[in-house]
Image 1 (cartoon, one colour):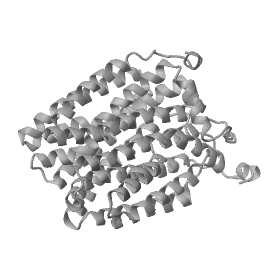
Image 2 (cartoon, one colour):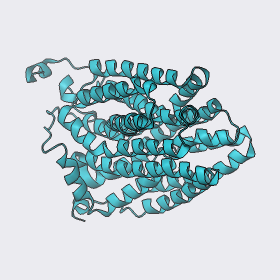
Image 3 (cartoon, one colour):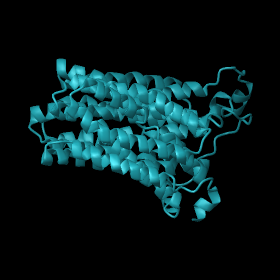
Image 4 (cartoon, helix red, strand yellow):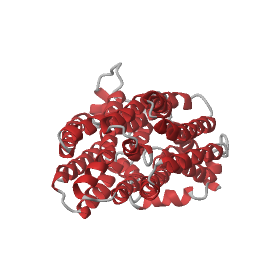
Length: 428
């Protein structure tokens, strides 16, 4: 699009950035939903192929780790090539890996498709995408947008589980995979048609700004730039505290509950579809909780928000073994509501603190490294909880340990220096 075409485009009361938010919402929803599929496949794969729960969990662990590791490089690729090209390519690779999954016969094939390919492809559409979109398209309401897009990722992981579980129980796990492939195709087509990379392409300024400027070209090597930003961030105490708290966040959410709750419910005689329904309920409440968290992060001290979120999450995890042993559905519903509101409400305040400390230009890649810590924690929990279950015959110990670790994260969050300036952070 030429500069003349941009200038003569008529103004519209509707801001196109909300279309971008909707497309990003759908992309993150689908991507996270696909990442949730292995938790449904855990028991069916164990029954069909004879693989141990610990072995299957190790592959899930690899996928979760790569999902996080690719984040900083995803931020660089998004800035270099634009949202549309990166998302379309990632969805195409993910769809292809899913399409051949029903043909697997050996464990190494499962490792390749779900440990490596799926982890890398979904990692290109992780939380870093939402943060990068908000930075490009919004000046005002940025916290609300980050909260909404973060909620879509966590909610997708939880809302798709009942569908996948029902298809698996009634038709077999391969039909759940086919349904996932179909959803990818639909979103890929929408992104290819309507996604735009920058407000300048539609003749608009970022939301909350009156200055319409061309996007700043990405400078530097797409592989070296994330590493250079990591090296700079390692000298900042703020980075270590953000990464440390996010490590415990990943350990206590998608690594533990997202991966093992269905199997833990099965240990107590709760049907797979019913257990997936609990996760779906968490997804509904997470949509509200994380979106509200984004709104709150625009108005209140993010450190105090993190203190409250991690504290409540710790209490809910300590309550979970009691709820499972009680055999009362009301106890599990109470856990789902309480925990769901706090599922990943930590992302908006964490992203805001990263932006304040490192600035708009660096925050996407540095937040990507913070997400790496999140996924390392999730990876450790995905494997560790499965190994503990094989060793001790119960998930209770894993839930209790995660609960106490969340209390540590609460204390760490309050150690972040309030209103630390960017220059102080960079020179720390």
